[in-house]
Length: 361
Ligand code: HEC
Ligand code: HEC
Image (cartoon, rainbow, N blue to C red; front, side, top):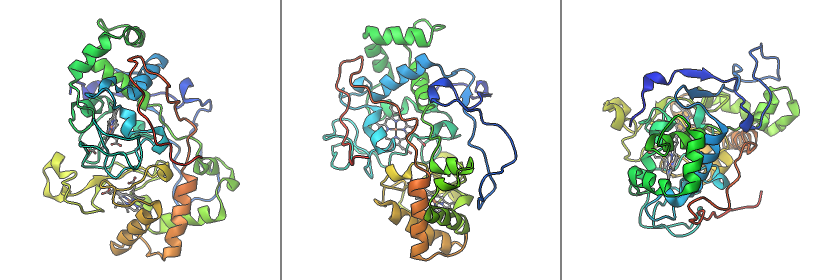
């Protein structure tokens, strides 16, 4: 859509704005923490587009919109239906169920409209350079209205969404406050900007891995440390690059008939390639892979260990060694420190979508 890439020059913000709930400034200095099986890289700085700097007004507006079914054709489905904080900002399903679905978010939810790919986590999306499994969108602003336009997801024309929002005084006030320079302030572009600003706050800081690299040797268990070394030895870190354990590479791992990156580049060499997903908060984001074909984290890891060994990306591992990688991924990369609070009510008055709230944690 309608955003000028050129105008999105990077703004380095020092990484920690007030509403991220953190105070320390990342400082460039030689690494002197505990041993790592790879070169240390600091947690990246937050980059915002020049034409959409993050403000508290935008973030609180974006949060309400994210949970409000006002953006859906059936007035029951929201972004959070498929990207729930209870499921690592995914939904616990192999394929997501959009409008007219039944049941709370989580396994068991079913309905007539399903996506053909697994819903990715939104944790750390701020750091990505391309969005969707095939990387077809270059920014969060560009991505934000796609789910509305998609008939198996929210199925509501963005222009209709804007009409609805303009009829809700609380939203008009909040858009005015968030976009004082625009008149009218409730527009498709500002809707996308608010959703993007909210998503830029979903950052997993202070996982045990981050505490470890900050000098706390005890943050990782002995098994976790071994798993981290094996993760490097098996060649995993070449694609799932620390500290975010992702990269902008596109690779074919799990054949499924999905064209993947090819649909963007029309280059046959890209057939079936998917963007390397982050492994942060993996404990909560299953089922795994673009086709949701591994339900358990341990199974996903075992499959990747076998693929990596067959392709000689690193050392072949035993099943016991693969299990140690799972321990590392499950515990060391988990952080809900910046999790937003789900609103009880939203300005439309429509019900906030139900969540399956799987296991008490
Ligand atoms: C019906 C389920 C569903 C709904 C509702 C939904 N999404 Fe998604 N979302 C998905 C799926 C599935 C994908 C992956 C699609 C693909 O790669 O082709 C995705 C991908 C994304 C991505 C890309 C993430 C990445 O790492 O590439 C973002 C960002 C996102 N959604 C944000 C939103 C926002 C914001 C809303 C609400 C306006 C929303 N989604 C509504 C299912 C959903
Ligand atoms: C050459 C690049 C590459 C290497 C090396 C690699 N991966 Fe992956 N990994 C990917 C891609 C691409 C995907 C997504 C594949 C898909 O869904 O089709 C993926 C997906 C995963 C997933 C599922 C994540 C999710 O959210 O769905 C896990 C878990 C995983 N990899 C673990 C590992 C482990 C453990 C290793 C080392 C044994 C490893 N990977 C090595 C590229 C790689």
